[in-house]
Image 1: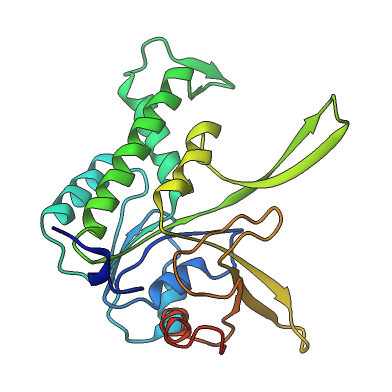
Image 2: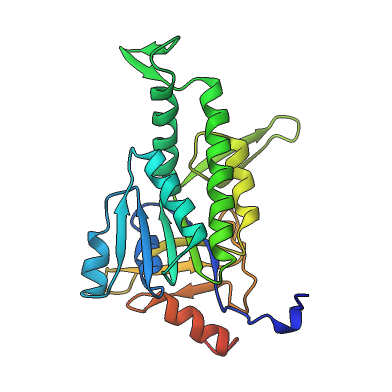
Length: 248
């Protein structure tokens, strides 16, 4: 029977990396050991620039929902990699919705400007596809393999008429609001990536590991709320910080 005393803190990580485009999510994921990328964004050249000849394997699946699901099923049965990265949630959702529209076979399509657009039932399909994705990623993570899902965010403004209050929060960029709010609950680690201007005019790369205002985050590790990882290997920084909590 499993016992918590046998758990090794930070042995393997089940992560959600979120933030605006260009804040280092993909590069941070590429720093993990022996990674395999599900590429939906088509921007993996940044990994070559960051890591040179590091062995980083990938397959591109933009517009290929069935191919991605087949690969996920394969990895749930046998995964030879140290890390599996799904990059990104946002582009995956677009692939899912395109797949749903094509699956209708042109019958009863809603057209706007001569183009078929998603209907209500397609967003139900999106939810089912995301649940299927998370279940597969959790199955892979159960084999003590690092798993990372990257995601873009959008700022959502909510107005409370009775209290005359307006609040802003960052939400995962998907088609449906409910599933976007639900997804983070399934991950042990949810980090918010961002950049700030440095003293020399170059941006500093930073990440919140715990809630900071509208930038929600969480961690099950002994990490500080804020990490700065400019010019550092993100994975090595995480592992070193875990070893020496409070010192970095």
